[in-house]
Image (cartoon, rainbow over all chains, first blue to last red):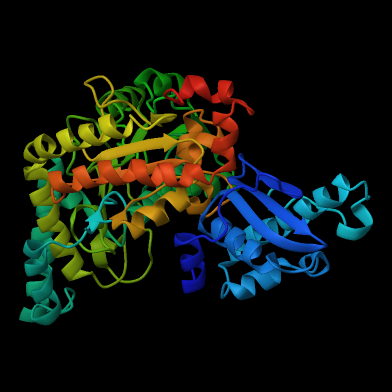
Amino acid sequence: MLYSEQVMDHFANPRNVGELENADGIGEVGNAKCGDIMKMYLKIDNNVITDAKFKTFGCGAAIATSSMATDMVKGKPVSEALKLTNKTVVEALGGLPAQKLHCSVLAEQAIRSALSDYYSRQGIDPLPIVGEIGECASCS
Amino acid sequence: MKIYADNAATTPVTPEILEVLIPCLTENYGNPSSIYTLGMNALRTIEKARAQCAKAIGAKTNEIYFTGSGTEADNWAVKETARRLRRTKGKTGIITTNFEHHAILHTCEALEKEGFTVKYLPVDSEGYIKADDVKNAIDDNTAIVTIMYANNEIGTILPIGEIGAVCREKGVVFHTDAVQAIGNVPIDVVKQNIDMMSVSGHKIHAPKGVGFLYSKNGLTLDRFIHGGAQERGRRAGTENTAGIAALGEAITIACEGIEERFAKITPMRDKLIKELSKIPASRLNGGAGSANKPRLPGNVNMSFIGIEGESLLLNLDIAGISASSGSACTSGSLDPSHVLLALGLPHEIAHGSLRLSINEYNTDEEIDYIVKVVPEVCAKIRAMSPLWEELTKGQSGWERFAPLLSPIA
């Protein structure tokens, strides 16, 4: 199996590792049995994501996609973060081995899960905005 | 520092073996089936290697059949024996264990599709099986028993002599995959009642792409690859003279040096186990390596919960250490290693496994470095692991894992 240079860079020097104490949205996806858990924290001011952090239990691709996904939403309006897909994360990482694509799905879901939490905290039903956050096809 | 600690995966070709190998490619390149001197010289080289392989395991020269790998030898032994005994005696039963190498497990699964019935004997929580378990499983329908000599992941050594005696008493063909055991434990196929045995070259410093099947005289061995008359008409294809010569040399060196190597490697293994066991919430997989829980001298297999094996390996690689894991991500499937699951371990613990396999070329300095780096890497990964966070904060099910692991703090 081959990882791209970008994946190895984000794995070896992951961006945005940690927690946000006063996060406005927290999302957690995956489970320990599968071997992947991603937990993402978002700080949101005036509908802009001003900070993003993550903690991930998982393989190299899980850590690299968490790092890249948090990097990609940081500084972006929530409306743009909602458009983040696993495909854009994979492209930004210079590709992923086929058997690792589910990690990028998990990263997308973790961001959307945190945004769901953000809306819920404000008393807004997240479902029409964020949509259903399904199980990762590989993990169900 | 660059440390190779994955010798159970493969080994480098050593200079003394390269010296045997190279001339077979450059000077002694004749086709062993050719009648002229160049051909006969190649044939002599092969027959010398055959005698070396036979001597190393207490067999006769004409009981050795060269193959392209240990996997091929496994396929050959199990498939052709099972098929022959169904054809001649109507037997359709196969007995094996649930923690064999995939070369055996997937072969057995393929035979199930042909109508054979396979009993997968469960190993105990430390990765052992008793000869009595095999005895009780054998019935009139049993065609072949195939049980590995030593496990490739957790290094446990099974009581092959006792199992061989049981099979002989019951009149059942006994095959063992000795790919990991060869050169680590003394093997005598006669004393241990082994009917068939698979060996690979590249685990003992021969190149990849060569192995052999030992098949006892008197036992019919059907042709596996059709074509020319090589390997007494049973395995066609022009012989890999260089690989075979290297294997003959490698197995001689490996089997003559068992005691010396054991004395050198075992203390290094035990130091790794002792020091890495100090990592919180960890465990040793497989027996401790005592007389009644024998373990390969170079095998260490530990689990660290809250850590995923692949990220552990990538971090170790960055630190210069090559090692292996049984996590799902490294097993190429969604489930972690079937060997670790066979021990009864939950997925969460199996995902965090690390296999270090050392040999006589590793040094004390390297062991010290591994012992220093692994805990640092584990701490780094755990610091960013939500699973570890949950376990340390007592939020999620530490009590479920506690009986299997060392204390968490």
